[in-house]
Image (cartoon, rainbow, N blue to C red; front, side):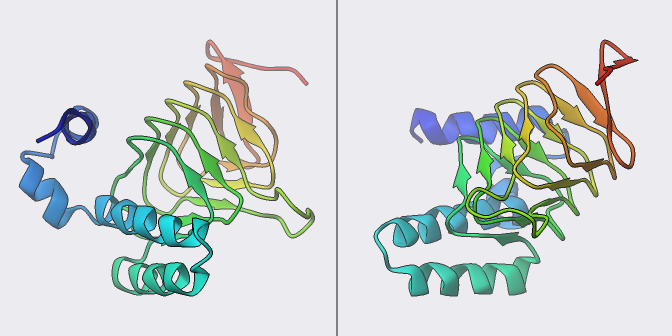
Length: 176
């Protein structure tokens, strides 16, 4: 197995103690399957065979209950754990080594044109049920707590929790 694939599977094993083998990850992890099919759909989207891209992702959404727009830009080693209900919008950008739990929406607000979905930088953890809405940026090494609703930028090395999310650095709220 080449180093790139080994690195991907090793990154999952490091982030999910329930992951026992590469075969288990490939066959039984819907988030891994969704990202695999997204990458194929994204290829077709980039070469302007958009119908094929949408068709692939239509079936992914219906079979795996994970919706990733084929135009979204996703970095290396994205891991969608327990993926049910994840939605990733068209202009979303996701960096490397991001962990997303179930029920997450990276969506728009209906108030913006052009870039209307979030940008997620490297090494971010997004908890279950989180909604990150609009063209906001989540900085590197940040954590978004379960069920938070994020509608403003989150600086690097921060934690955001609550509805609407309160941003904390070193455990203390960041003043605006």
